[in-house]
Image (cartoon, rainbow, N blue to C red):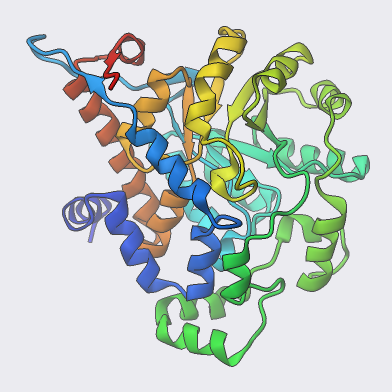
Length: 388
């Protein structure tokens, strides 16, 4: 079946992100699903993220004649086909082998950014040629600055143009549901995992071919691919020490745009601008890090007000539809990133599944803009919302 025929079939069989997620859940082991789907604590923030979007309701305008929404967006001097990118996700090879390669190829075909995580299961050297000039690199700041500089050099030499520095992981969160499901680093070959592989044969076949997931970018610095040792290295050497001086140093050594990710407090947004960073990324880590945080979409307006257009504002956490993306753009985000749904696409439908997710989000965004009566993002921001 040709590429276009596949996408046409997918659009009819799986027209919503939730349809894709339901299929993905049936195709991967429970431990992988729980890792992707879970939050932390009682996970109330996961639902709060969703509920906060639902509160934003518009009063549309009609009788505007023919409307065609334009969503092509320029960010940091680069044009993208939509204000939508693929967010970084770690340990992605557990969810589907080679998923980062498929996401990179999607980003290149669709012309949207893909942000590769430091703790991905593929290296910048592998992903760079596939993602083309759509590659961004997400940094968990190493304590060892020689390792930091090496990671940045590898990303730059592989063609990654923007740097996303994660601020909202001062320490690992507990993620109790993942633990209860049996997630271990490295994954243990237990009878339970073997059974899950047998009952999810496509996942099992591809995992056997590729091997159990490894943190290939990071293992470069450990002189071993022993996952237990590498995961200990990650826990001890990455993150937990980020401060504003570190951010200033990054500004001195990275030549492209730098975005600070995980910001919810307007004071942090203001400081990021003050130290010379190029963007603020509003996020609560998809509800996975601090269950007591505010829904990211509720934090967005205060940060927009504080930044006052000095730098672009990026957003993630809770976006599942093009309508959600439009809501974030209405509140002042310049660009949104989406994580779990793109992973769902690959797990459910294979190497072109993430293309289908991109097309759903882009088409849904354009459709809702026309329903609202807006041709451009600027017109979306002038819309009127209903106050109950």
